[in-house]
Length: 263
Image 1: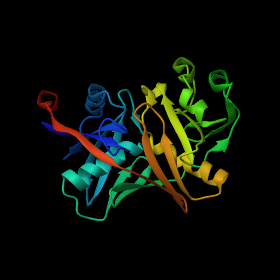
Image 2: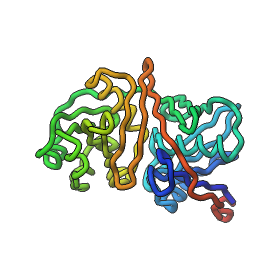
Image 3: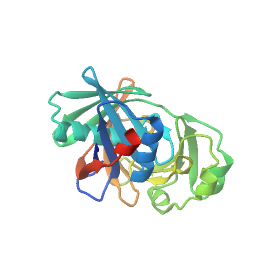
Image 4: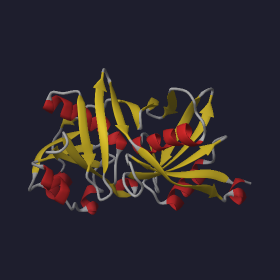
């Protein structure tokens, strides 16, 4: 049997934020089996990690593909290590396909130390033009397309055509605008990865924080991903890194019955 936890990341209470499954492993499973587990969990991400000389190798799977970086499932994994598995150091170091990622605690928040991914202005792809033309202000890209809309209400009311967004060549699309209560708000769509709308996308803030820091002229930012579940995020730019902070709570823990598949 494999231990499994379900953690609501970027959430201060259950049923909010972004739910992630976390599976601590002694050794790596077959990649196909990890993908089957992620599909069975049917959450936006399932994280697997293995201890390696004091650090932790980590991988993330959507229900359909493995991804190179996931913020909320990394935060969820850190929660499991700090709160459930007795990690007593100050900082957890994860090794991933996106390099070294660190997570520490500050009071009741978990702080992700991720690389900055500054988006650059780009030509507007036709699907984005079709979907967001009424409120489109500008378009940038890095790992995802960053679509800046005219105002917060346009972000909240957007109902994009997923078939059109699925035609895009990058991982996903973030829509964003300035906010009255926060520095900015956002939503994230990744239909090509099996996720129509992700509730709170930690990795998207590696791109959003550098953009809004330049626009607003400040290195500390507050944000909210305004999906149906919603989640608050605090960001700070330090050198070439982005500190992304949020709360997390445990929703469930249990076991996965996969003995026959491991034989």
